[in-house]
Length: 291
Image (cartoon, rainbow, N blue to C red; front, side, top):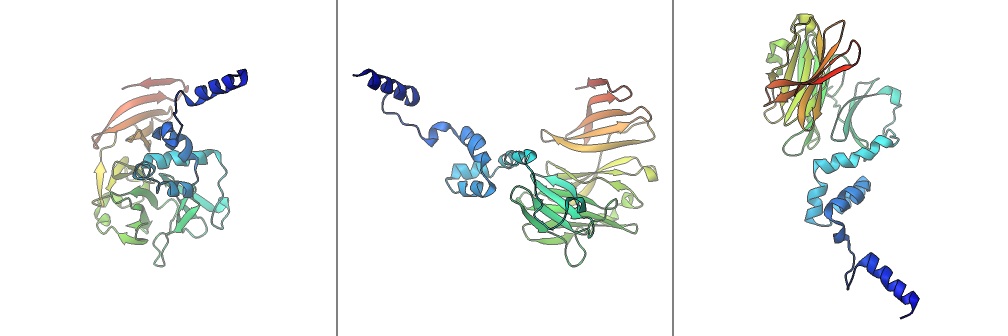
């Protein structure tokens, strides 16, 4: 065998192994295939890939893959698919890659998927889905049938209404019992909703009525609101911000004027909170992990 043929044989053995082995797409492994190749496909390409086999359909249909697939958007320029300049559009809330935005001049609500550029204007002819800043609250969530829904809390002239929009049926329905909650009267300040484990959570600031901060949970299956336990503080004023970390509900609580202190609490067993961190803001230095 000549020297060139010998070197050629060595190269084949190095790249392809010994014997009659041949490389195929199965040799890559499902994890590498999904999270290094398929995750880089455009949305339509992912949809076509779901037709390859049942295993691909199962993996590509998970919410984990959907969130991973949205990450490249963070480093890309996003263009609005509807005719409106950015300074006339407010992003209200987000959930699993979907955005709920409103037009400042009309108050109309739109659910928008920046990845696919698909959007749906959900405002109806009977004034449902018209958003008013500083009065209304919004929350996106998904139920057990994978129906993505939008909850809209509307407040007008001291009264409140709650409506839910279903993307599956393209329709609104009213939560009839919502006005029975006495603590909703007056002028509380509502946060937008944060979805975690089947419940859409809202923080309600009621310091005008000396009720402090309250936490409400909207169970998406029973469609009922329930008052939840929220950490209490001796200070005259405190505020909170909800966030989901590792699929658990957390809240940052700011309190202690004039020297701000920020605590991080985690909800346990869906009814009480434990403190994880506190930070003393006077010198922006002290941070302590509690648990």
